[in-house]
Amino acid sequence: MFKTTNYFILLCLAILFWSCATQGTLTGGDEDEDPPVLEIEKSTPNFQTNFSPSKFELFFDEFIEVKNTIKEVGISPPLNGIPKISSKGKKLVFEFPEEEVLKEDVTYTINFGDAIKDYHEGNILKNFKFVFATGDKIDSLSISGTVKDAYSSEPIEDALVMLYDMPSDTLVYTERPLYYAKTDKTGNFSISNIKQAQFTIYAITDDNLNYKWDQ
Image (cartoon, rainbow, N blue to C red; front, side, top):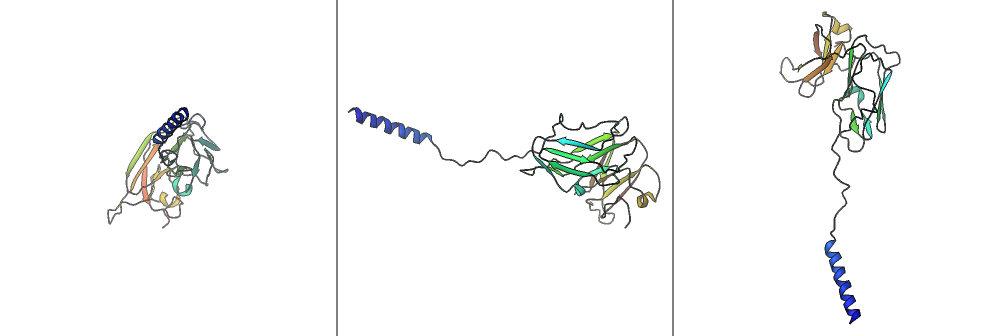
């Protein structure tokens, strides 16, 4: 009778454990949909004044990659040379061209567009900007608008909108602009951190990326 009772108890426990167990599939948790976040305390400080860097470094909270920098990264005022932009692990390094001489008393805006994304899921950190001034203040004016085709009134994507602080009809052929931005898919553009002055504005398509109108 003792053995029979034990067998009965064991059988009840087995049924109890089986009924509590459920089958499922391991999912690894929710999919990461958040873009990388800048770790401010580790990175080169943004919005510095009297800053003439040879490079700056940005650290993020996860592994990143940087792609299509020539197309995505906009630097205003434009540089004469091509910067080196690289990433390793969670760090992004922006190195200015060795012979580059930055303009005096000007605010530089480096817009990374869609270039920065997390390594595993590809979530994009959209339009992250690094801003610094070579003078003692950060310029704060801005301008925005829309570029449309004069004949069809359709918005023009990737048009180059350029600002010159000197009045001349020939500047667009001979000189790089002081500030510039590219239009998005809807033809909209925005240029920020502009100094207080009078400007001449042009909008062109710049297929060879030389910031000039050369047809």
